[in-house]
Image 1: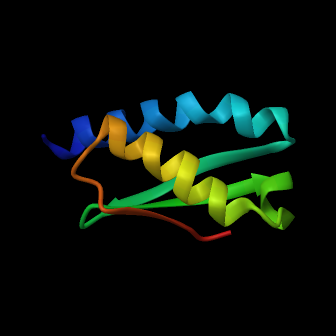
Image 2: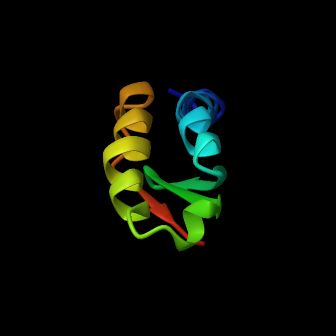
Image 3: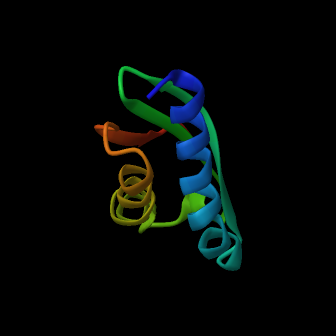
Length: 78
């Protein structure tokens, strides 16, 4: 999979999870993809949420890996 395809797959994964985040007053944006590590920025209510790391790993990372299995992890820079 080339870089463009990988980015498209990751963006598709974020679009899939975004409605759940928006419903709680948050959002997510893609910062970068390097060495099979996706960096995202949690926004809005997600920033101060005490379960955001669980959401990141169990929701976002799982969805991203479903769309792009070669991704090793998703990290948040917010």
